[in-house]
Amino acid sequence: MAVRGSILVVLLVIFSSTLAAIAGFTATTITTQMPPLSPSETSSEFKPSTQESSRKRTRTQFQGCRKTRSRSPTIKSGCGPCSLTGVLHQRASGQLQATLKSGVSLGSGEYFMDVFIGTPPKHFSLILDTGSDLNWVQCAPCHDCFEQQGPHYDPKDSTSFLDISCKDPRCRLVSSPDPAQSCKSENQTCPYFYWYGDSSNTTGDFSLETFTVENVMFGCGHWNRGLFHGAAGLLGLGRGPLSFASQLQSLYGHSFSYCLVDRNSDANVSSKLIFGEDKNLLSHPKLSYTSLVGGKENPADTFYYVEIKSVMVGGEAGAGGTIIDSGSTLSYFADPAYQMIKEAFEKKVKGYPVVNDFPILKPCYNVSGVEKIELPEFAILFADGAVWDFPVENYFIQIEPQEMVCLAVLGTPKSSLSIIGNYQQQNFHSSMTQRSPG
Image (tube, rainbow, N blue to C red; front, side, top):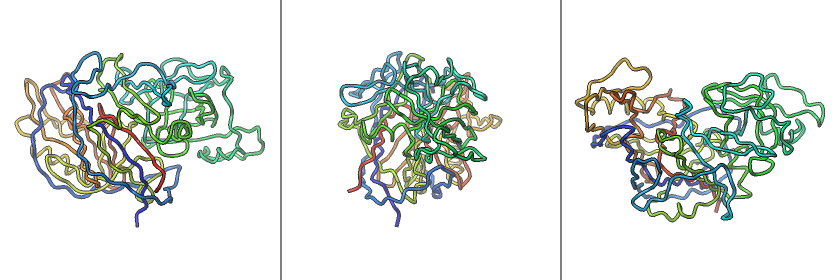
């Protein structure tokens, strides 16, 4: 029998009518049948949870309220604002809030979070990643590091920095570099190595530091490689014990929520990340729930894994599972599901010349001179009945100079993870809540 966690994903649809990103789109209904999406197999530093708990179900359809494209992120039709100013800071309401911004201006497909680190505090921008656990920053001396905006974090400049000893039980939470170093004394630091699915990685010393909140476990990375484009490091928000969200649970409870601003917004437009219960969100009339899957059906404790009954391109498809990952730009569906999604669009999209020579993304269409582009609807139906409907600008991407549009979904091998990336999450307010069993 499957082991499940009573964990809810709350998705408030606050999707944008920002037709400047993709001008003149409308959606039409078509139907296609697809084979099941297969739950994925992946490597992780953490083993699947064996804790048994109940799973709560609701059957509510997501609904949308729209906002207009402007330089200010004001929400109309009764929707709450999806914006915030300021870096990570504590509020009297028992919440910790932070600013999120699109990394497009830095050439990144990620979202960046502003954080004060150390004592005295210094400002750094970190990538927001719900698909991993480790918090880390590039540290001086940086022996092999990528280019970032601003100076590296230097532990010598902070009075609140502390090394974690290799004999400390917390050292067992991280993987050691290969070959592993023998631990001979209390004064020896705890080395770590952490890698990602795209072969990006970070290596350094596992340590403690103030990230507005004191004594946060993080990686002080001296060797860091990957496509992190301007960030100072990464803030992990996965479900494992290393993540920033997990470390804050004793202070702010088991909930956090975020809203990803339109990725093409002006640089001065930001959205929000909230640690702690967001009562305004929970009381919103457009709110719906779906359960996260835990235990044996979840490939790793890290992931926010949801069970999909079908993927709809104007109709229904097969069942399966996927993860919600703010650290992946595009969405990925494991074959053969991806092939059926792609073929459904190819079969039903009419009237636009197909562009065959564009790399990676398919299908692509030449829409030069077209004022009103009609494309199929795209939605995900979860196993407990909730439906996540996406606006067209969240699953078709316009390629400069705006004469071509491509499906913003990629395929992966059958054994790989299916992922709902941040491109499809734009202008949705999502909350992750882990409740105790019972």
